[in-house]
Image (cartoon, rainbow, N blue to C red; front, top):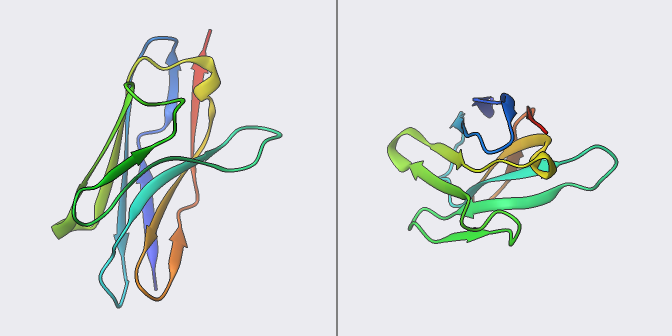
Length: 115
């Protein structure tokens, strides 16, 4: 019943920008934190950015100043604006949403940054 639908991934050149979107639906309880994680080939999944329902944010050091997370609480949607993209940002990006009772993941969207 719970579904996270992601969009916005793709191929971009170094220095370019992408905007990821993720809409959550089917949750029985209010969504608290939403965010984005990424997993590069051969590496573990890591936090990119999270945002609470109150607007508090947290970013990985590697993306601070380049990425911006935002959300629309009414639509249960989270966004990730990615600027100044670098090849090291290449990864599968996963949407995340959590309520007080569960934690959910999207299927992931590929972001590839060419040199």
